[in-house]
Image 1 (cartoon, rainbow, N blue to C red):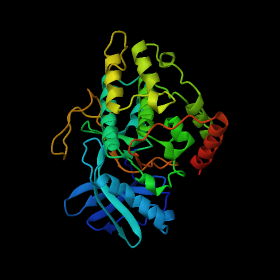
Image 2 (tube, helix red, strand yellow):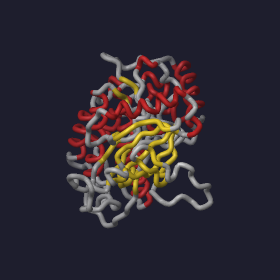
Image 3 (tube, one colour):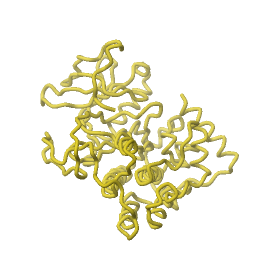
Image 4 (tube, rainbow, N blue to C red):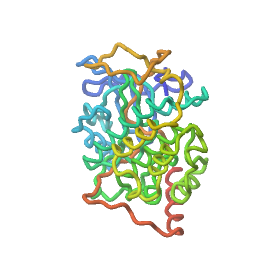
Length: 371
């Protein structure tokens, strides 16, 4: 999604021009499941920011307001180069909001769509770079007791200076809150145990979702694709993913084995950390017969850009076109809103459940995903 002007056919946004503390709302960027994201301006520090404002439908609900601010609390104390940073959070006239760093770039979903439109696959070096940085962000979150539960391409931002950031940690609720059941991930990327019951998500659930993204980057296709959320959830729970080499015959057997292990149904049979997954994938892609991806790297990012960052990071690879797209850094794509939960100490992967019970759970998930 590009940061373009709002269509003149739409009514003007009443929040545009409003100042919240030191931050002025300039224009809308994106509508999420529970919040609107705006491009904003810090009038004191004179820099762009992203402002996430709770949707008008939820402003009168103390429960949603608390959940909304819980996301900011969960991330405010973090300091990781691959996770978007929270600058400020507050409430003004029952308008709950928080302010995040502004990321100028593309999301991974757009990147994949553009490669697909050109009939190409992403170069392996870029797959590894993006995968490693997402894995580092997830490992960091897991060490801090938080599961993302909505890892997907639209929540991975590739900045124009080459930085890769994981965003939208949703509602960071601790396990004691006991109200996780009504919020789920995105059907195409959801882990089997999470599809059955959202509260059963474990760190390896996030790594399953990362595995789906890696599968997509390396084959150009999702392991499961269906317009029905129910069917998608059932496939994640019960169906074996198509072997990656059926989708991309140029992959070697080692790479296929890594991807299939990442997508195993039982969390305990998957890679247990993001670092383990990416180390195995790097070895596989560097072994003979891995097959190249596209001949050139990301065509949407400059090799060298002027940046306000303290230190310009190297771009992912050689590029040919400069494209300025400003990205928000906090909302999930509708209809699903990311939800982060605490990882219980000593948590074990959830047990397998009978098929009939799995079906009931999946049907419940589908109904909630359609809300």
